[in-house]
Image (cartoon, rainbow, N blue to C red; front, side, top):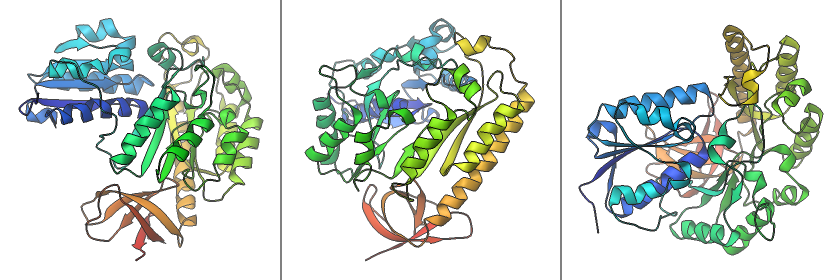
Length: 415
C-alpha cells in the first residue's frame, strides 16, 4: 500500500544516534510513498525527535514543538527531551502524541496505518549512520542521557553486519557507526564481544570502502582497536571526549580517567599517523571550576594535537548529581570561558587543515554548494570543495588538496 498524498515533516535535534533513528523513519516512510516535507508545506504529520543533552537542547526542542503546533499537523514528539519531560510535553499546545525512545520505530506504523519492517539501508545522506548500540551504563554527574536512554544495549553482530551489507548494496561507500556509548558495544551480548571485533567482522564480510567511528571514550581504545586503526578502511578520525583537563573536575564529573592518562593515550594514538584528526568535547563552567581548573583544561587543549573542539557551556540538568554541586559558576564567566575555548578550537582547526594541503586524498562527494563546487568529506573529517561539475552524491573521488585563503581546502581531481 502506498501513501503518495501523505506528507510528513521530520525534525531532528541532537546526536548521531537521534539522526540515525530519524533516518530509519524517513527511509521507511519514503519507501511506502510518503513525502517528507518542511513545516511550511502543510504536512499531515509532524514528527519531532528531541534532545536533552543541554539546557539549550531543551529550549530547541520546545521551540520546534511550538512551531509545529502552528500547523494543522498531527504532532508526534519523541526523543530524550520528551522521554524525561513526558508530562510537560504532553500538555504543550498542539502535541497529539508523546512516543518513548523504545517505541520510536513504531511511529512508522502510526503514520502509515499498518505495520511494516523498518528499512535501515535507505538514507538521505552520502555517509549513512548505522546505530549499533543504545543506552549507557556510565554515571557522569552532569548527564541526563542515561535516564532517557536506559542501560547499554548492543545490536547483535550478525544483525549489524546484515544492515551494513544492505547499506553497501545500496551503493554507499562510508558507514558511520553510532551509539550512545559506542565503546561498550558487545559487553551485554552473550557471548561478550567488542567494538573492534564488530569492525573486523564488517570489514571481512563487506566491500565497504571505509568505516567511521562516532564518539568513543579514550579508555575504551584498547590494543585490538589500536591495531585496526592502521587499516586504510578505517577513517583517520577519532572523537575522544575530554570534558575537563582538571583532575578535580573530572572526579566531580565521575569520569573514569585523569588528565595524565588522557594525555598519555592521545599522544600514543597520535604517533600512529600525523593525519589522524582528533576531536574532543569540553564542558566549561562545571560547578567548582575555578580559574585554575579552567586553565588546566585550556592548557591541555593547547598542548594536545586536537583538530577541533566542541565546546559546551555547562547547564544543570534536572535529576543529575551535578545540579546540586556548589559553587555553581556565574553565567558571564561560563560565556567567557566558552569563547576562549572556541578561539583555541578555531586555531587548532586552521593548523590541522593547513597541514593537510598538498596531499592526495580520497573523499566522498556530498552536495553541491551555491558556487558550483561539490563539498566532499575526507577520511580525517575535513570538508573540501571540488570544482568538477556535477559529481554523483556518495561517490569516491581522489583529489590533490590545495589550501585557499579562507582556512579551507580545495580539491583538484586526479584523472
